[in-house]
Length: 423
Image (cartoon, rainbow, N blue to C red; front, side, top):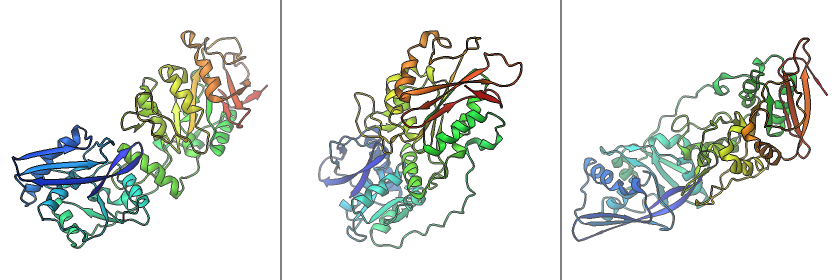
């Protein structure tokens, strides 16, 4: 019987082998399982009995192959239970052809939803698997995979009936929901003035460029950056599947069965760990950079991300590429994680009468002057443009800066007032 394990943002097919042999009662799971998979023996035993089937009082050995891929999560509950029932004769193999199964079992035999069902469906299509049996909660997202027959099973008894050739469970189509608004209902048209900064954001959105806003506190940098996602083009069909797969693996879809309706917007705090920002672990899990794939990654107060300086430099330098991946931190798997997003970053300057003349973080952050090297290396040869407010009586300290990239035409800027003159 086939199932799947999540590796990064993709799924790898796993063969679930069950052997029931005479001997003292025992239940052993091998094949590099984690604690959640090892604990499944209690859920499986109780669910089989409460579903009305007999649980064998023999020695049960479950092998999850290939054995060199780590298995984690609760999605192996249902394939293990069906494998035991097939070994005892309750399930007749070959009734629905080649199939894969994922699902978590409750103690009463109900099948709970799992994360990554969309990634499992894509893996089945790549490997030529014709049928996928999923929990009822995951039926909608698995149905998004073209060319795959998806069967929903609310309970363990329904899953046994499906494998024995019974009629599929009829799933009522969900009511269409209105189009999702931009994150937090933020609209770019709400901004008044700020012509230079708005122009920079429009260029960044049109060309998928990174953008860095630099200026004094209260100049409107955060307000503008949080509205960047509202002017990005809508997701195409392939992009919806790609972004929804990542969020399904992370368990962050709005609800089971609902795909992404808008481009993601992620705003991690500067106290986030390296693995939380870039992703990692074994198997690797997506971080904030990957969750922002095809959307916006917002880094408020960029110099405060000093702990993540080296990984951030690596990821940021790859963001504008058409096909990119970030490698997990050392001592973890090197599976690629997609990181194609528009990076919007903010750095506040300290109020001072000295006009800005160069990339200088020592004035605002005396202890973090090394952050200037991050800006130079990750943003790839930014050219600075200085502009000051054109309102009479505005002191020189109310000034901002903008950068454009010589290489890619990226535009970066902030303007504290509606009227500004570029020099």
